[in-house]
Length: 158
Image (cartoon, one colour):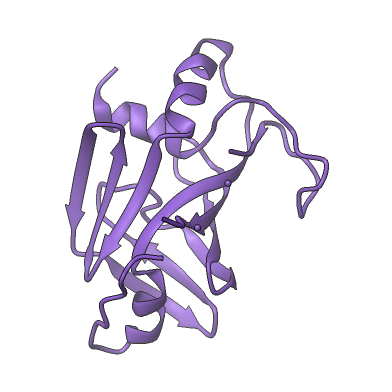
């Protein structure tokens, strides 16, 4: 499986562990592993949202819309704790261990308060409807063809 495919798998899941203290009811596959980077202030009509997204994020919860195949679970479990999404200016990239994938030209669309649509052609969460939960947490609802579901991302604390 190539890096992009592995990231696509890992971005949308992990082990089937459940956290009883989680903020919402468990889904078909609900995964939890646990976010400051220096923000870069962008310019343009969506500067506030893009500024809030600056930094490194990890997926702390994922609820799949469909069952995750059993044979994908070991790979997803391995990458889940390692996968990081990094946003720097208008560039978004993903890293899992030593493997990295960058996608330039992040676009924020359909902004309404704390909600927005993320556009990162070919990248993770491309087209996802998103909303900020708090200053260091946002949720991405992705109905893409590969791994539809809801991911909760938290800023990585260093």
